[in-house]
Length: 485
Image (cartoon, rainbow, N blue to C red; front, side, top):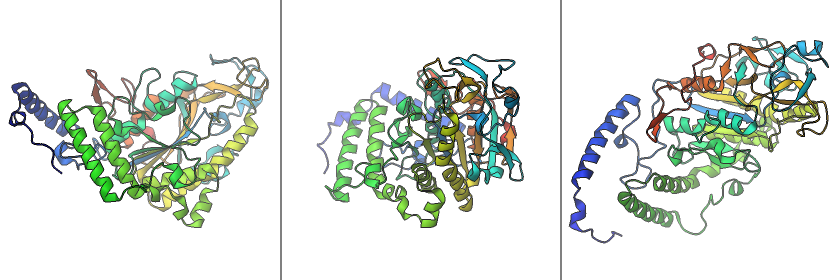
């Protein structure tokens, strides 16, 4: 029902309001033409009233990108590159002996520690992979392996922030938030950025998928995938108290109240974010139950992904991107399982069994559905591990000589789909795997390249906050053109 009549004086603008709205409005209109982003009038409303603009409406990047969506497989804890994607036979020669050179690590390390796993070539490309990935080996010709990654700090917390948001100290938006801010989402009934992470949050929690100073609509939506029932995966996914029409009227009233509040508070961004979250939660009741229900998949597809938790996560990830979700981050393991300070042979075999079949199934499934070419798949952790054994007097292990410490100087990440060069290995670490020495790729360079694949010039892709134009790559980053097909 209509609200009370407003005083006639409230219908007029003050001189300051008029100048502000006209001047800023024309400037914003011109800016949208320069950045390639649609003006507010061109963006579909989120249903939150005539003043509201849908922040998740699809938008065009700077130029046509080869990738349209992202699945980021985050191997939490720092996988050992010399045991997975970067074979180093020279370590066998130096086994039990000091290396000719060392680097400062977080803890003391000792002699060279050869990998307990065999490497062999796979596919027409001949990419060498560890024996612990027999399923992924069948997808070798789809992989682009970067063996020369570098980060800044050998600690989990800042390195997680660097890989996820390009900054080790300050609060910055995550990569997924930047992508969703730039491209919006193709499905307005689901979040544009979904985080699948079992058993709660990892180290640094929601900072890994934060929106920071970007509008709150671009924050990642965490889903605890340890649950198997849709009603537990997403709380309150079904409203059993009111009818859809009654709920719609409630939200319309709430939108009107919030709209009135915003008018008096000069468009409060936090209120707008909350209003959008109410609307999205309402729309999710229409589609989320279907998207997260893997029991609706044919049995042969579920069997292809396997029965474990990670297989279910990756099947959900495929179902989400298939329905237009822009960015899905999938975390493997709880409590930093790839952080192998000891018992690395047993631990890596177990971790590989959990993720090898599901990851290979994801790549094959996307390819069969014609989605791999337009879906950028990223797999890696926050850093690598030392080729030397970690000494047992550091407190990080159980007093054993069979693990590795953190290593930001050189590690591996692999990509697939989305316009990357398939069946290709880029860069190299030294003969022992301690540091990147050939075609080095810093995390900033990786981010710049991923943005290019999505259609963005990382130097022009900015957001103005506190009087400064911020970007994901800060003042760094170069596009690694060699890995782009």
